[in-house]
Amino acid sequence: MKLSTKFPLATLFFKHWSVDDREVGVVVAKARIRRGDDDKWRAEPEPSLAIEDVFSGDPALSSLATEQEVAPGKVGTDLIIRATARCPDRTPTSEWPVSVSIPDRLFYSFQVQGPSVWKRDRLRGWRRTTPELVSEVPLTYEMAFGGASPGPDGTTLVHDENPAGMGFATRERLATGEDFAAPQIGLLAEFMGGDPLAEMTVCGLGPIAKSWPPRRSEAGTFDAAWQKTRHPRMPSDYSLAFWNAAPTALQLDPPLVGNEEIIVDGIAHDGPVTTVLPGVACAVLLADGARIALTLDMVALDLSDPDPAQHTADLVWRNTVEEPERFQVAEVIGERV
Image 1 (cartoon, rainbow, N blue to C red):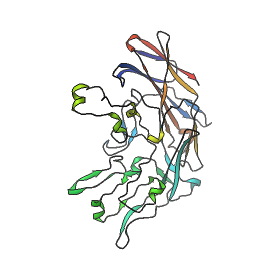
Image 2: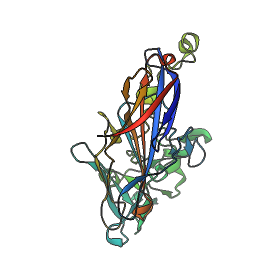
Image 3: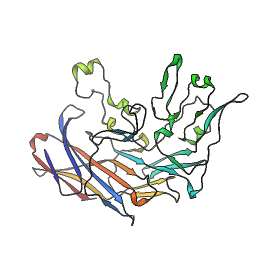
Image 4: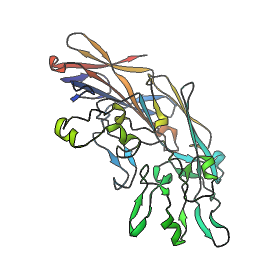
């Protein structure tokens, strides 16, 4: 199927097996909008689709920076946010909260802190030092709980849920008696704990890599039976939720539709950053006159620049077309909601 559009959209069509093993067509459309000096959002003329995952470093040990947008479908909308936490009132402090909210739909929060270390005291045992005063904390999984730690017999153990993080400790690490860095992103109650071996919740706003739990479990079972009876199709217990890259707390089902207000607090010195999604939707018009509405299944906000005029939002819509071989051409349109 050849797609066309008169709108500032990147479009893509490809064939894929649905979860019930039928071959269907997948239509993807993407817009990028930018906030201007007048605080109004405008579409950029030539957006492009991300066709592969991009990591911040070694894919085995670093966080996912950009999730590919060539996916067959998702469950609900991924809300992904790139940002830096910035202290209130421009006064360096040791900690402050960060939150994301959509009125009547979502509230998610965690705490950020300045650098601190676990230090061994000969009399009192392991204690975490008081966090330093800071004005900014990058909101990456490298700053959250996780990472690697010495294991038995000279091995290295990697935290399964966040290989990129810091603060993960084993008894072998403690046995060295050496200081080690504590995470700077987490839940307030867990920061108050005094056990260096205690697990902490991995908190963040960015995409989760496909190989990290809990996303990995949605891919299904790749065993000998799959290899013999289903390859190269996905396992029979595979879920479209595998393609949802946002943290579970930032996955919205039913999906977003446009006009929602997204409020992110703790990332600007002067108060919350508010983004109102444009009231637009996309659909595909087929040659027989049928109209298929596309679902807004990814909203990726880049709010990392302190200048709001540099903020962008990537919006991705997607849906399937039954019996796609019947259609040679189709048009993707935009419309008000």
